[in-house]
Length: 434
Image: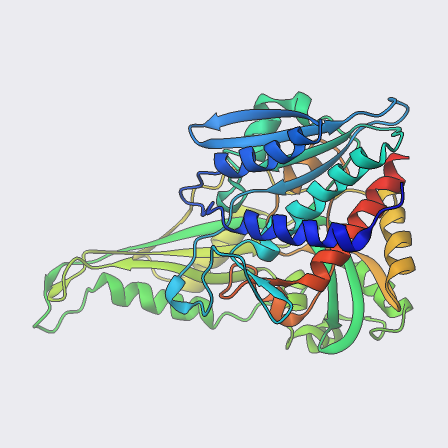
């Protein structure tokens, strides 16, 4: 069967818009309608499908194309939930799938419903082609990734390990970019590890009082001073084994100079947050809560800090560093509901990595493919802990504007990238399965 790609692109676009219209903001999640929507499409093609209820209205969907068993299964994993929207700051409706100027707008366009459509079309096309497979292909749409995966991949690994018993997995965490450190270049990063999520809660307790009088024990002021010290904290860069490979391979391709020292690295990445985060323990204030009334001095003030630690860092050591920088006994620093195991690295020199590299370099002029570290958190970490080469990779070339859509306003994916992702995902998986 010869694939008629223009018709496939049209189908993908139609499905993408429909998918973006399903509001799966997490919290609260409510991902079951998305799981059922995906499953209905797969079932209509005669593809074996199963729904797993984890909580009421929170389901995962699995589907299988069966191979002859001569190779072990491969999973295409995508999450169905999205982060909430501050609609007042969007110029387009977030849940209508608006198409404008070659772009599709909607929450989840890049994170990660676009990739979900790429995985879905890959399953549909291989089924329609009747391609004899050497390994089972598993489609997996899971809830709760955006809130830590407790009711998603973490739950599945603990309660349904049979569903995730695969040799390889593809999900989010890496992709292509049209720029490297501000310069034009087609760089594709395949994530083999990710930073450790280490959320902290800062709590300040003071003396309440009337807002009309001078006051010297205001919990909000103590907290603000602590946050100011953390914001001014200068932390140096560090090179991990994974990022050393990233640097060396980019240097070998002539994209950057050979990095011999951390000061040289600091100068190279300091002005580029996406790259800088790969070499730095990051810390950002994301939530602040204080006060009950305009004229009441707050007795208690709290802030949540989103910290992402480099692979191999110790969480308790980091918490102690934060306490030392704050240097104020009135501020308590505690871990904020995060008890999951630390991420582990997986080998990049595998059949799947080499297939990705071959397909991408054949399709994209001047493409460079490198192993990398995802600076966010993904469902891959749970599979890596089981020894599975779980790679973060979506075969698209994101512009800086598209990359800014991750958890940002006016999130969008170009139709050109959707088409590229559909075609290259199909080719990578086809080669892996045949």
